[in-house]
Length: 233
Length: 233
DNA sequence: AAGTGGTCTAGACCACAAG
DNA sequence: TTGTGGTCTAGACCACTTG
Image (tube, rainbow over all chains, first blue to last red; front, side, top):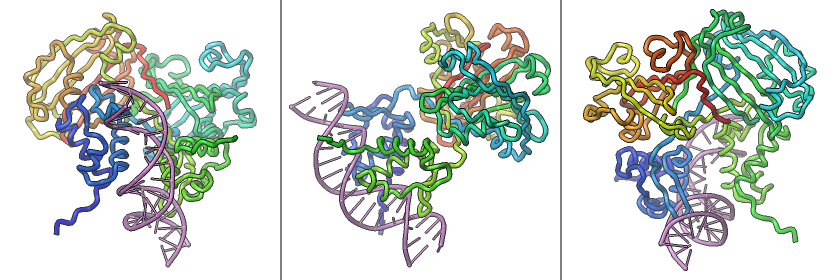
């Protein structure tokens, strides 16, 4: 009886992607309008709209009013990389997580940090240094500066049993951040904490976090030798 | 006259995010149903649906049929990091891009690559080594292995004037990939090509690319000393 | 069994940009 | 000016999941 299921937006999305991948609609070309596609697939325009909007979100096509929908010429891949709390990362490896506070000091904001965060002079900063272990082997060294003006009762926390990462995530969730990855040589305390010879290449993640335009914290996380950060397109 | 504009899905998305950020709806709590929110905001359920769907895509809430919409307890941030072609990266810095082919060899697939890509034995691989310069200073060293079975007429390309990255992007656009970042020490040819002393920490990106489940290429890109990869939440 | 989100529809109006 | 996507609506049916 050749019964046809109704096409869903996913079917349309996939079919359009197919035609782009197989060069039926080559890079830079103009796609049919939403109305034309709706007619072809026998569905409402809203359904086509949702399909094409998803492709636009993925950077496969660009859309302009009156200009129509075009296949992008130079696709810029967007890697989505999930950044979880260290505890989570370690537990996902089926390893035992251990946290240790190295130091906790209240300081005047150093000039470099003041410039980086755009803070007024004389701001009080809580400076923390911590270690995260996986199965009793050093996993990550964390050095963190917290703007006490942004989260005043951070002063009540001793951070002896919980890392500042988890505390802040619970306290100031859903913030914005800027990240930078780089490779740096092991020097000074890093050698000791991560148990590596001086100069060892280490993977480092720096992150600045804001909550509603107020700078909250800057953190530098340095990983053990050989650490890889992975993800998928 | 207190004229009210109709609320859009963005207004609702932002307002819901506000209530989550200000703990009106704390982590782990249950949000009102779509119908209830639609009534509150005076709009159609579809509008609320779109707003909440976007928050779910961002990992702020989770949604389940019959279960309702819940604020996530441990937000996992998703950094979106755009990965452009090297030429683009360099030109965006207002620097002059220069490309040079170092070597081009046809080889039998080495065992490690065969395992990594899941290729049959005896596959022919095109092995390329290239340099990318910014303002005549070494920027990135690229070592690449291309599965000739996946893109046969790669053999017609000499890659003297165009890098394999750009060629593949034009030839096999919209593929899938797996990426790994790490920090490695400069050894062997890297020292020479990137003009650094042995052991210098370098930022490295490895990527495996598939096109419709066929492995196409594996590439190892090593950046100049001090390179940082940046992005925003 | 019932409640919630997931999706589709047919129609409408609007905003932007190309001519 | 006009054609295209952007969005909203009111209603409908379905799918999943919890009780």
